[in-house]
Length: 228
View 1 (spheres, rainbow, N blue to C red):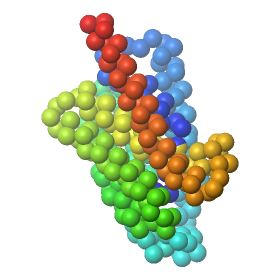
View 2 (cartoon, helix red, strand yellow):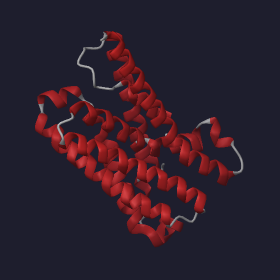
View 3 (cartoon, rainbow, N blue to C red):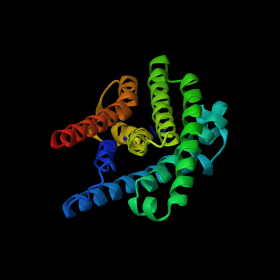
C-alpha cells in the first residue's frame, strides 16, 4: 500500500440515501467537498503513482522490485478505483445514464477486488516489519470487505444499503491519499520515531475516516427515525 489520507471523512456528507433535495448551501458544500477530493486524488496520482510507470526498473522500484507485479496490480487497480469512485456518487449520471453508472460501478468494484488482493500480498511480503504489515493487511481487508457488502447489497436490490457501503468503500479507497497527507504534509509528519509513525498512520488513514463516516450515517438514521 504505497500511497496509503484526511479527506475521507468529508465524503460522508454525500450520503445519497435520503430522497429529499438538499438546500442550496448543502449543494455548494457537497460540490466543494467533491472538488477538493478529486483535486487531492489527481495530485496523489501525479506525484506518487506515475513515477513507477515511468521508471519501471530495479532502480526506480528499489525495494519493491522483487514484488513488482504485485505492486503494478495494486497501484493500477487502486488508481482506477480512486478515479472511478466519484462517478458513483454523481446523481446526474446515476439518474440519466443508468447503464454507464452500472458499468462504471462494476469496473470500480473489480478494481477494488484486484487492488485489495494485491495489497494483501504486498502487506504479507512487506519489508517494513510485521506490525506495519498487519496495519496494511487490515486496510486491504477493510477495502475488500466494504466492497463485498456493497456488491451483495446491489445484487439483493437493497439500493440504500448499497449506496451506503459504496461510500464506505470509497472512504477506504481514499486512505491512500490520507496516508500521504498524514505522513508527509500534515503536522503528523513530524512524529518520531519514523517506523512507529508509519504504523500508526497505516491504521489511522482508514480507521478514522471510516469511523467518522459510520458515525455520521448513524446520526442521519437517528434523525430520520426521530422525525418519523
